[in-house]
Length: 107
Image (cartoon, rainbow, N blue to C red; front, side):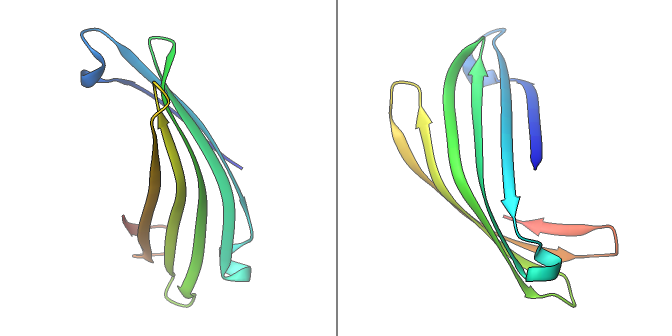
């Protein structure tokens, strides 16, 4: 289970507004052992205590070349903005091992 929390001042939120973005991500599968992983993730951005937008998505990772540490990541889901407007959410990334403890991620 991966937990993430971001606390930031959002310039687009207005003068003095504070944004807080908690999130949870659960992933099943071991990319090193199984060569794949899939999960579910959710976040919400609160601006001065009100939900501004929320995300729900499925992260999918596949090891293309395990020996070199090359992994492809895809995210599929949706974002709901305040007022009920829903947008599709999708992304693609490539993760490559640069050293034993360092990875380069392009999204």
